[in-house]
Length: 90
Image 1 (cartoon, rainbow, N blue to C red):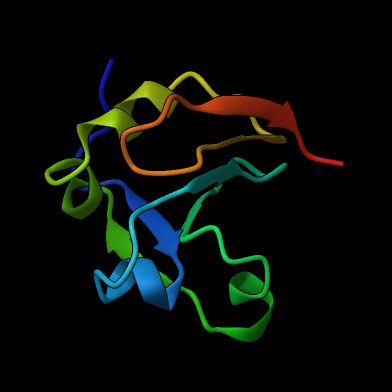
Image 2: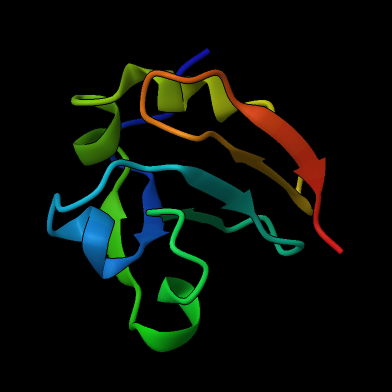
């Protein structure tokens, strides 16, 4: 299964500016998707950008592996080619 490329998701500035790959994907309890660079301080100290997920999946097809995540769960990896590790939001 793949994301619809026009589906809107939130990304941190590092991902938006292509300075960092997606290392953390979150599906918040309301069902919205957020993709971050993995820097723990980035989401708290930066303004998210809304983009179509196709901008991410074109360069990183492994993001499509997250389509099954239920609201309230996340996936993370240590680098762009690593396998995803999954967990539940606290």
